[in-house]
Amino acid sequence: MLLRHELQGRDVTVESAGLGALAGHPIDATAQAVLEGHGLSGQSHVARQIDRTMIDAADLILTMEPWQIDAVLRISPHARGKTYLLGKWLDNTSIPDPYRQSRSAFEQAYQLISSGVSSWRAYL
Image 1 (tube, rainbow, N blue to C red):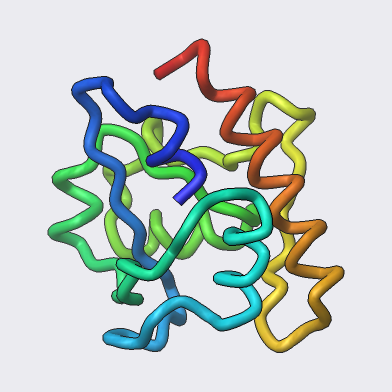
Image 2 (spheres, rainbow, N blue to C red):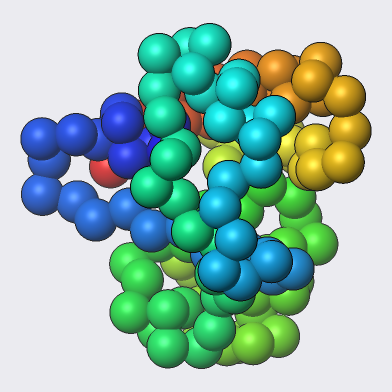
């Protein structure tokens, strides 16, 4: 949601998919509350599982943690060279998944995601 918001008005499509996503489910209620607290909404979000077709179609794949890069490359080895950490330009900062944690973990993840999105702005 943050990257999509950041790139509004540009000829860029931003999609979201997870490696362990609860496909078909809406955004986590705490994540939605955090987004709303920052003037955004995730109401339109529907979780989906990443697959080879999505990976092949993407020009760039951004992950939160290094193990996710490895998982993407196991699905589609040729994605090397277009798969990076969202925190790449922030000393390869990892962004831990706050799922099933406290609101403060979601707030921390939001701040790290926001910083990561801003750091990619110059490259997109």
